[in-house]
Amino acid sequence: MTNGRSGALTRAFRRRWRAVRRTVVASFLFLAAHGAGAFEAWLPQADWRFERGVVASWAPAKTQVPTDRRLAGKSLRFTPTRVEAPEPLACATARYEFVLTPAPGLFQGSLPPPAEQAARRLGIAHLPLLSLQVTCDNGLFDYHLITSRKALLGLDNVVWTLSRAAEAESPEAATLNLLHVHMTHDMVFDAASVARKRAYLTPGLRGAIADYFKRPRPQDEVPPINGDPFTDSQEYPDRFLPGRARIDGARASVPIRLGDGSRDWQVEVLLLREGSRWRVDDLRYPGGATLRGLLQPAPS
Image 1 (cartoon, helix red, strand yellow):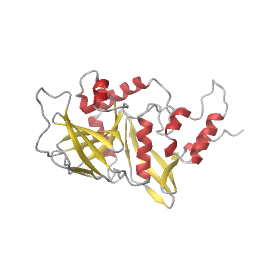
Image 2: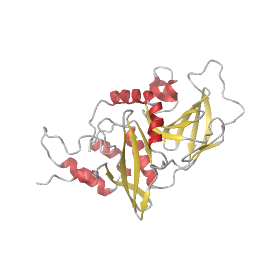
Image 3: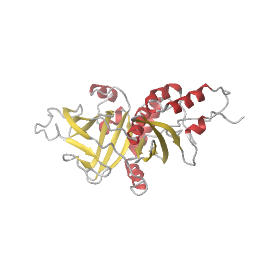
Image 4: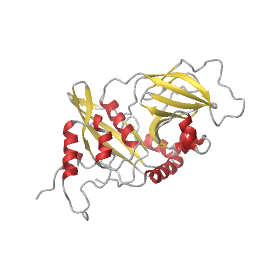
């Protein structure tokens, strides 16, 4: 297992965004290589609703929000292969991936500088955002997720706000929520990072991680987990795509495709149902190693 190291978050985002800008074509390769035959992608099956639109900060003078209400109040739904929505957002052959987007990349780079301030004026309190990038025959559409239930879409010089109801409990939704929190913050493996994800982890996994951090080790010794075990990476990923879960009673596994602009890889998230909620209990990496195995003390 290769794991990530801590670094300055802003430098990491700059590297990731340069990779994202270079890899629109790579996105097609990423999804084509893992098509439906080998990997069944999963998307939240919930209706999004267009709430309101505001004139974008990059729009020409005198631009107005369309008065025909062709989007306000309308619904949009993502399915594994298509987007059901008003034109021009409807899509019969949709390809998806979740992409990390820093402020300069929002709305495909249209925000005026300084982009961070322009993003704040749109109500974006935390950066980077996780964006659902949808590739269709008629274009590329970015749905910027302010939260798991609220998104922004730039279309024809208007920024639209979309909202949806809470997603039903499922292993895939739990995995997506974990990755949303994890990848939009520093992905270094430390107590503070794990604490942010506490609600998505089983007590057993939280305890095993806590024991790992308590264990003394020489400062000049490379730790067993030398990076980010949640994405199995040293160079952190900037995109991912969840697959459909395999469920066996109270246990489930969700495959995740990850990429960093130069390579793609997969991890398997193992979940346990506790009451009505699914929580992450372990991760399995290529070759069969697991997070819980790496957390165990070395044989004496």
